[in-house]
Length: 165
Image (cartoon, rainbow, N blue to C red; front, side, top):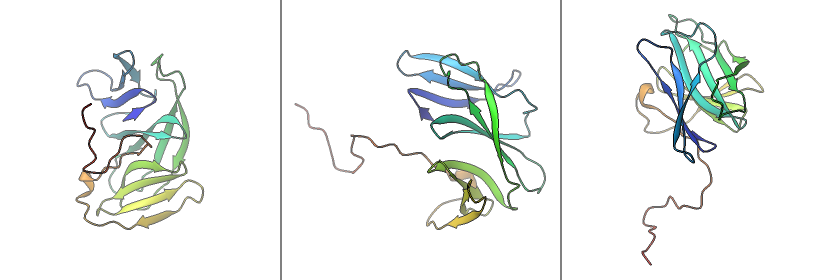
């Protein structure tokens, strides 16, 4: 994920604590950010996202078929320090059976998620309700991803080429 001049991804270490690894694009330097101090372990689902102009961590326990509660952790604003000061901001759920994984925030107050049967649902933080999102041609739930779009001056239309001067 790219956010405020940094690329972020979760680094899974075999014998050490997992961290979020960041790469500062302007200084070309790597930093690691500790995950929240709680009982995150191999049974925990973890993903990163952007919410209300902050980097957030979404976690939930992977247990049987129990309804999931997704916890939203917000990273403090001092990204350069890379200390990993997290605040548990809210709990989403418990969600109805079949909701599998969060994808991306939409309009800050809506979280797109995928279900076990491949449907995409929209969870409103305001109303705390799920709504199915129509889609066509998406594959299995493990293959569904969502990428935030940011306005750019670069065209994404095919056939537009920058000619050499």
